[in-house]
Amino acid sequence: MWGIRELATRIDARAVVLVEGVSDRVALETLAARRGRDLDADGVRIVAMGGATNIGHFLDHLGPAGRGLPLAGLYDEGEEGFFRRGLQRCGLGADLSRDDLAALGFHVCVADLEDELIRAVGVAGVREVLAAEGELRSFDLFQRQPAQRGRAVEAQLRRFLGTRSGRKSAYARLLVTALAPDRVPRSLDAVLTRV
Image 1 (cartoon, rainbow, N blue to C red):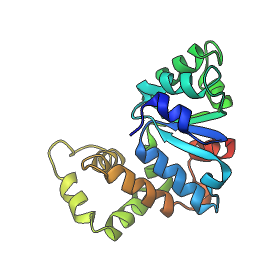
Image 2: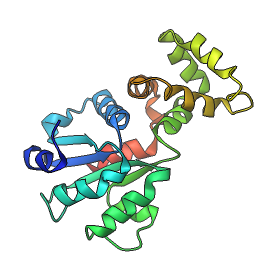
Image 3: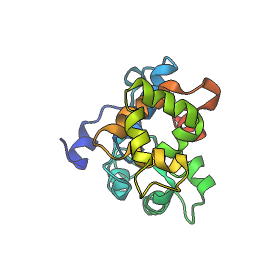
Image 4: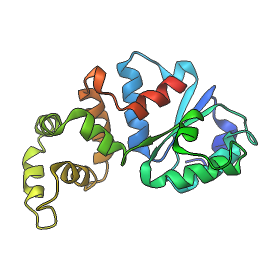
């Protein structure tokens, strides 16, 4: 795997979308494919940064002071401060509000990608996806664990999606595939519209 500096010099792109992790990248790639869009052919690269704390480094190398590439991004609500500070530090504004971040092409997932997708697909729809993957029984057992009792089913689903390595990415693809066209989370739609 390349370091940030090497990635910045090697990346062949017209525009770059910065996302926190692999599941975010998978969700955007899946949505673009569903819409018949070939991001590679469009020169759009989605880069999973390995966490929101890395945003400043990527902005330094790919943004105005680096390669000067058009940028967009997707971030979890709890990580907004990292994105705000990174964008301000690289000269893209001061005292940026959430609306200012969106105007720059950086859109929030409330509370995170999984939460957005669970709300958009709906609990019944997510359960159908789990059933199709043979994981509904596992989820039903998971719900009975003492730590899960009394929690909203949406919170249980979010936690369940993060309990096994690779599950978030797999379900990012599956849940985006299950979305009704009019139920696409605004943040995902806005990022793809931007680039």
